[in-house]
Length: 212
Image (cartoon, rainbow, N blue to C red; front, side, top):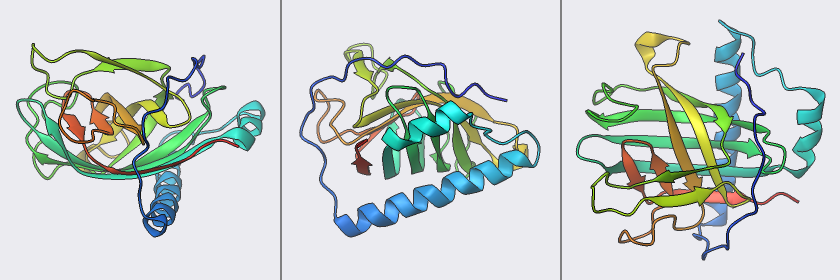
């Protein structure tokens, strides 16, 4: 069973202007995210124990943040692109996380953790761990600055498992991803708020409901 709770949260960084989305889309996105998480948990229970949250983790759910997102074309590295959608809930203080969704490689990926994912492959992703933070690039070019990002109430940094249909309930790839309602890469034109390690960044439809 994966460890879901190895986490010590940092102080949040100053917030940039949040990406605005239509209320209707936000509600639909969060509902879709909940369904994706439930489907992922059911699939996991067929071959492994399901998430199996402890009482302390469930207690932390009273202060969780929730998010939903859709990114149609994550790209920027020399090869490959991917579609990514989903969402879930997490607690930036305790490290509780429960998130999942759908993914598909839309062109062949030849570098990074998703190397070997071919166009049309991919079914779903789920979360291996909530990370305190990471550093990333949107293009992988040597002249691109390495950018730090931290998990807070408006940004989730995740270690995720990605699954192809032929691999069943055994993860095909493991990579970091970032979802945020801030622009995480001000040095790149446009708004970049979704990132997959070794694939690149995207402007996604993103909505966060901060913990109360």
